[in-house]
Amino acid sequence: MRRKIKNRAVLFLLVLLLGTGSIGLVGCNRQTDTGVISEETSDMRGETGSLSDETNTNIEGEVDDISEETDAESTGKDTFQIVTSFYPLYIMMLNIADGVPGVELRNMADPQTGCLHDYQLRPADLVSIEGADMFLANGGGMEDFLTDVLEAYPALTIVYALDGVGEDALLAGDEHDHEDSEDSDDHDYDDKQEDINPHTWLDPAFYKQELVYVTSMLGKFDEEHAELYEQNLAGYIARIDALTEEYEELAAQEGKKGCVLLHESFAYLAEAYGFPVLESVDVEKDSGFSAKEIRMLIDEVAEAGAGMILSDSQYSGRISELLARETGMETYQLDAGVSGDYEKDAWIECMRKNLEELKNAAD
Image (cartoon, rainbow, N blue to C red; front, side, top):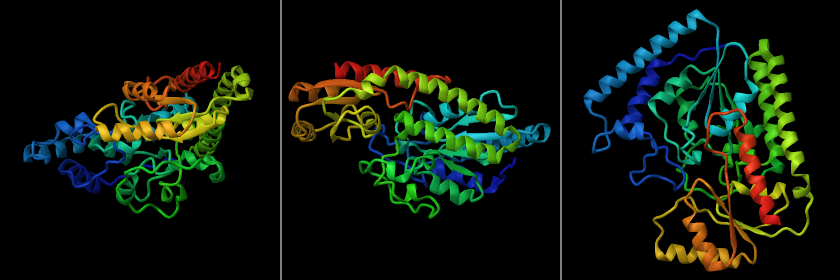
């Protein structure tokens, strides 16, 4: 099934709203001082936070040009356009759709964005979404901005990777400072965004379940190439299995130290390899803490008990090192897998580094 969504009037309206700041799509606390993640979006705003008339005119012309170009391409060839919400899902699709004729794959959030809770839609995103045959999202409240997208494009086909994992297997999540939103009744995971930890791609077993589910959905929407998707899936899972077999002894090792997580994403990895989680402390910035906040962090980590600290390598490590000095715990850095190069083996290499770090921690 191949389909194009055409709704230029709504697209242009959303572009203007994004430019004028009428749609607020900020999630967690990890923001720049201006509260804007994308430099592209920031450059489009004037000092007052609104677009000038000249910029509005330029955007209108750019949208028309892009739409006309897309129409011209669509009439010349039959394509299946897939848009992923952020980096881990793009790497997933690089493997599943590798070499499949006619597939056009795009990623929305830049891999340097970090946690997708922070993401703000850009005009270019709306253009990509408008022409998508399938939008692959994580679910579980990760993509807060989808409420606005679904209002503009109610016929958009969205596949949630998290639907591949049984709800009973999901871990409880930390509460994030999301803006209130009304989510679709059809997606329970998004309705329970404050209760679920959505970072399942860091558990190899759950990651494989999601791969199987997404591949099955691709086969339904693009039946002509269902067999090719299945072949790619088998090859990718074989590489994942080869990696996990290398660390079977780590998974079986008993008596591991407990850990304090500085980001909830590592809860799945810790549980998969038998590291008891003593506490999860949400630290999503490198600096800007007040003395009172630092004292509270130190007390919270110290109260967790003897163990180690697992921090996110996308940050400088200043906070984790401070906590280690104050509590006497050792600290280890893991990769949440939300940024990196657009390479097929990116997830495998990320997981290999994480497992090596956990192996060092267990010795």
